[in-house]
Structures are given as structure tokens and as C-alpha cells.
Image (tube, rainbow over the protein chains, first blue to last red):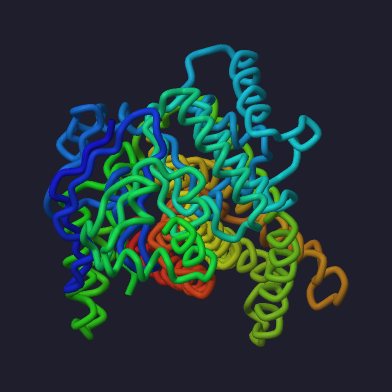
Length: 252
Length: 280
């Protein structure tokens, strides 16, 4: 479980996050939604420790991340898997080497066991063996995201953060990625946080949804609650598209 | 103005480092003076060096990366170093010979001047300036691209000390391979002088050889190699620092690459003066 308590973040004079508190439960897909520039990605970066918040704390199963010592922080980081918006695969390493990277860096098993684990992770995200030796520039965006997921789960993380996993993907591939994240979350009992503004993704996999508006937590609830909410800002965001308006009308 | 979020040894953003960087950004938006910016960057460069010289997580990985860098930074520079050194020696020999108008100056001075100039200044300094353009630019662009593509964030989140992982193998590789490049350059520069003397007949090749053998002090090579080691350190760390603090997109990567080269050259020229004053 990841808990965020009273998190505030400022860049210069701009207050990007104000007093955000939330609990992200284990074994389900928690989604953070909001317009571009609302502070979603900054929240994710505060959660993983890439940004230092001015106020508040982030607790990983009760461990306050920003108060931990250097070695404890490192130990927590090794329990976190992160899928970046652009995949963030290392250009100089091929698909297999990318997935093996965290294993080689921190793994304690033999080289053969590491390779076996990497092959298992790649198989789990449906990357065929003939693609293992290709470099990131030689594979599609969707495949890069899947390799990114395989790398994120290689160390059997307890926490998975996905920053806009569907950006730049076609709807069909987006669904594949969403389902993969959901399956992996349930299968491994991971605490997953997905940062997204893709409403299809929210309706497909969102179990616990937090709506961020102008850097504050504006709304929190489940998928069904989202359709029946009378929160004006949330409705403006969620029902901006015709399809979602039709869904709302159909649901009465 | 780019300002980094400082990291500790584990690559974690530190509270003091992050707020320092934030204060720095706010301050430098208002601060017009370049000397103050320079002090700010020197401070961040020191923090960066502390992270870069932390103990590697895995020596096996460090070793493999270091060998790759020896190939990339050193072996791949051998061609350009060889060509430039040959021509450099030829020009020194031609200019010295063409400026000797007094019959009291022996012809062997051409060889002597070519040897001394090549070993003490042209090979270590001029070749290092050329390597600054090639190597510091490559390092800044590579690390800067990794920064804007979030690959460095990925390393930090995994718990890898990104500064150490990316920069330390390059620094060690350069410290190992640059002296070899400079020794090759010294030899080819003196040889280039010999070839031009033999080809043009401006003096006799025997006089040239006599000149390069006269009054040789091995300390001049020691002095040149010490300079080379300092320059290798500057080129890799200054290039790495400018890549590491890149923020933004492809335009900023270009700016970082240029800035890395320019500051490497400035630092080489200043340190050349300091070392020369201290050692000679």
C-alpha cells in the first residue's frame, strides 16, 4: 500500500500540488486522472522520490520515503517498478539486456537464472523470442511499452507506477497495455498507480480513481461513481468527448 | 539557465539538494552576472563529482562499460589524432626551418624545436582541445539525450547511482587511454616533421634526426602526460556534467553539448597555465 499525506509541491512561485492525501491499495489499479498540467506527473515523481515535496510525506507500507536514510531509500526504490511515458528504455541495450538490467544491477541469482527471469517477463508481456535481440529504435511504440513493463516487473516489485502508459498508442494497443497492467497487478498483488488522461483506460481498468484539478485532489471514487458524479469540473473533464456523453446518457 | 536537482550517492533526490536547485533557478532568472552563475555551476559540479565518484554498484558492469568507453572515446579517436598530429609536426618543422635566417643557427634546431613543441605543448594541449570538441560533445549529447528521454530518471528510480553509472566509466577510460593517444600523437608529430623535411629538402633529414636526439629530458614527457591526465578528467567530467543537468528537449541537448565543449576548452587552457607554472 502507498499512502500520500498532505503532499505539496511548488516550482518557484507556482504551486503545482496542494495538500494531496490519498491511499493507494494493494492488488488493484489506482488511477490518477486530470487535465494536462494539473500536476499528475509531478505527483507521480514525488511518490517515487524524483521530486522532493515541500510538505507532506509518502509512505510505502508505513515507511516514510523522504525520511528514510540513503540505504533504506535504495531498498525501497528496488521495490518500485516504473513505466515511463516514452518507455525510457536504454538505447544502447537490446530488449533482453534492458529487461536484464535491474537483475544484473541488483540481482543475487546466477546469470542463467537472471536470463530465465527476463525471458519469463518478456513472455508475460507477449514479446516473442525473435525480438529479444532488437534495439529499442527497432521496435514499435507499443512494444517499447511492453518491454518497459517487463523491465518494471523484472525485480518482482511491490509497487508499480505507470506514467501515461497509453500516450501515443492506437486504441487497440492501449487496451492491450491496460489489460496487461491490470493482470500483472492482480497476479503479483502489486500496488499499482496509473497516471492517465485516457478515459477509455479509466473505464476499462480504473478501480480506484483520483481526479486532480489545479494541483488539488478534487474527487475520489470508483468507475461507476465517476458516471454519476455531479462534480462540475470532473464532468467537464470526463465527458468532454461525445462517446463519454453517450455513455452517461445511456446510464441515465 | 539549467540547474540540476542534486542527488545523493544512491541517485535519490536530496531535500537540501532539491531546494538548493530550486532556489538557484529562481535566483538565476534574476541574476544577470556571469561570475555568479559560474560559482553556482562550480558548486553543482562538485556535488556531481561526489556522486560520480561513489563506489560502483557492480564492478563487473563497471568494468564492461569502461572497456566499451575505452573503445568509443579512445580507439575511435585514434584516426583523427594520427592525421592531425602528422600535419601538426610537419607545420612546426616547416615554420621553424623557414624562420631560420641566421647561418649561426644549426639546422638541427628544426628537429629540436619540433620535438620540444610536440611533446611539451602541441600533442598534450592541442590534441586535448580537439578531443574536447569530440569527446566532451559526445558525452554531453549522449547523457543529455538520456536525461530528456527519462532514461536517467529510470536509473534513479531503480536505485542506481546514475551519475556514477554513466560518468565514472568514461572518466576512468579517458584517464587510461588518453595518455596512449598523446604518446602516439607525439611520435607521429615528430615523424610528420621528418617526412616534410625529407620531402622538401629544406634541411637534411640527418640534421633533423640529430636535432630530435639532442638534449632530451624525459621529464618533458612526464610533464606532458600529467597535463594529459588532468585534461582527460576535465573533458569527461565537464562534458558529463553539462549532459547530466540538461532539462527540456532536443534543443537543450544541443545547447548542453556546445556548452560542455566550450567549458572543457576554457578549463583546459586555464589548467594548462596552472600546471605549466607549477611544474616548469
